[in-house]
Length: 467
Image 1 (spheres, rainbow, N blue to C red):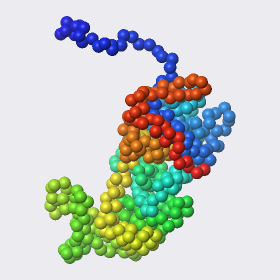
Image 2 (cartoon, rainbow, N blue to C red):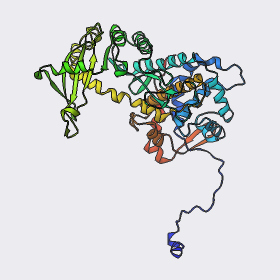
Image 3 (cartoon, rainbow, N blue to C red):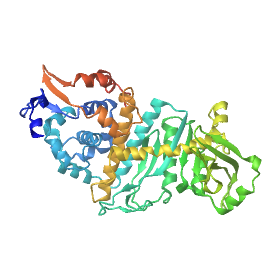
């Protein structure tokens, strides 16, 4: 075998004979240049400085906007979840060049830690204001006539970092945090960072959160837009439903099935059942008015039971029944500003069932942000972790808009961060300074595959956020 391996016919003509060091400025994260230029073009730094310019107390410190830029790039890069990674980046000339920073402007891990420790718990309000401004920015671009929101909690597993203020047992049986989030179009548009024991319906948080966002939409976007809120059984409460109904927004809520409800369903006539088919599966459903024992108001209820799963038809005892509560079709003000044709469509039981089923897809941003960022947070103090979490959420929002505004023609906007990084971030680039210019050079393959010249133009011409 050794003699065979020594034969010259196995020797590659391109065999590397030695290694050396280049003085060229090279980076393996060439796609960061697109993201950084996009951040500058949408005017995000001006928004951040409106709220956080007070952090820089001396001209000797790093500019606040530059620190945020490096934090956003840290999340988008995704190479490491440890803050000490900033020390490695600080020594990387190529990384500094590709994010358009001087080497002396790069921050260390100690500077990042001091930065986050400056924030108190009241800073959450400022971060939420920024998220909402980003939300209105996208609404004015997309101009929807129906806004579908989803309210849900997201568990963040911190079992390996238990000594954190706010790390508490969650409903998923691990220790961690459990922020409450409102989702729209794959983006988290409002969030409240909370300890793990705060369940979905903790206090009046859900109602206050929804009310504030609805008022903002009607004030800053369109006072007559139709708003639909999708919620799970964790928010199944008369106080919540009544509050949402008074806001004249539609709600689609997963109800709880009690024995009395089952007995009532059994007594309904068989000819009242209808069938909903989404092309892959069928559900039998029936409508009726629903009011729990102590409730004062009836709501529209749709009881569903799947007929089959895949090609296997379900037996009666194996059917996972479900009940959907809604005020669509009960409160006429919810849809009064839509055309007659759209009103007729939106109040149909089939449309409500379809919308309820889409709530599962609405939770994909939870998976998306965990793929983009991470669940375990680095600090012991709750306020520092809160600020870190909000930076991650804002970074994720900007990542989603970056895909829509810049990468849509080369990468599907539904792609997770891992896919985007592999295709549009992790490629080699050379930064050359010549004749007063700084030029980013990539291989011809990258230029052709990513249509690099086109997306370079797109990242410089998005619709900016109005300051």
